[in-house]
Amino acid sequence: MKLWSYQGAVLGACTLAFFATMAARLAISPVVPAIGDAFGVSNSAVGLALTGMWMAYAASQFPSGLLADRYGERRIILVAVGGTALASALVAMAPTYPVFLVGTVVLGGVAGLHFSVATSLLTRTIPNTGSAIGLHTAGAPVAGVLVPLAAGSIGVWLDWRWAVALGAAIALPSALLFGMVVRPIAPVRPDESPWSRLRLGPLLELLGRPPIALTAGLSVVGAFVWQATASFLPAFLIEYQGYGEAGAGALFSAYFVVQGLTQPLLGTLSDRVGRYPAATAAVGVGVVGYTGLVAGGGPWIVGGATLCAGLAMGWGAALLPKFMDHLGEEERSAGFGLIRTAYMVLGASGSVVTGAVADLLGWGPAFLALAGLLGGMLLVLLYGMRRARTDAAQRVAP
Image (cartoon, rainbow, N blue to C red; front, side):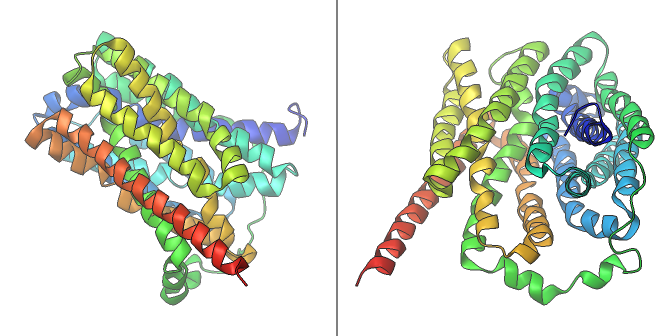
């Protein structure tokens, strides 16, 4: 694939679109304290809005593929990125907390229409699918590096509303560029209703398979901690560790830098040593990192703990391929979409639960609880590794 080709243009437009949908969501977290003060609401109330956003994001991913099969990928992605711009503007201009709450939920829902559909579009357009998807996925950590720092600085210089409006400022031109670059492509199932493909029995059977159920349970915990961290790490650093908004934004960016850099390494490690061993290494580092965030002790310790947390939250690169190992070729696309929606919807409660714990007990106990959850996840992973070794020994025994 040549970068200066139509295929390269489609890849660039999709990557920019993913960057935009992630940027709009990440622009909110660095200014959570200012949002709470503006509306006179608690951390748990802001956490409820963020939980609604992430739940809507998760819930829209599975049906997005069904809609793309019916109406075409280009149309759905334009709705996703254009809708992200409008929803970000609504959140930035919200006059009251209820409007802010509705706006964040709408933002999550429209942003969630992008990823699975763009992956399908790239697969249909570019022969080197693996490289294309890898570059496309890089839009998220790039957003994680740039946007929190920018939003935090804008929040200091201007106001939280201008910081949140950064999402609209990025998404609008991204949608226009995508519309100009990407040509319409024929839908896969133009005459079939998306809802006719939703049957409860097969969906429950897939989720209930033991290897998938165990890995999904681990993923719920990992997603819970990820959501809580993405929502409240800047607020934790500001209110518990005494950082300014710009400094907290810089550490939040560093958290995403490490996450983006280590995910490919964890994925490669999982191919070599196994899914659970690689995930165990990441989660073990996370227990140390989140404990260090609470313990503090100076900028070097907090900085190092933040980097450890970033590495740990790359757990998905090691663990998510486990699902593919247990899905048949014909069920991987819809099956993985269903699984991803299921564990992300449950994990999205990390925002509201962590916000509520912070309101009741403080930020220290709230983040220490995240370390405890990762500790439980670590124990289950160790059990899974031991069970796998036992099963392997029984299979080779005479």
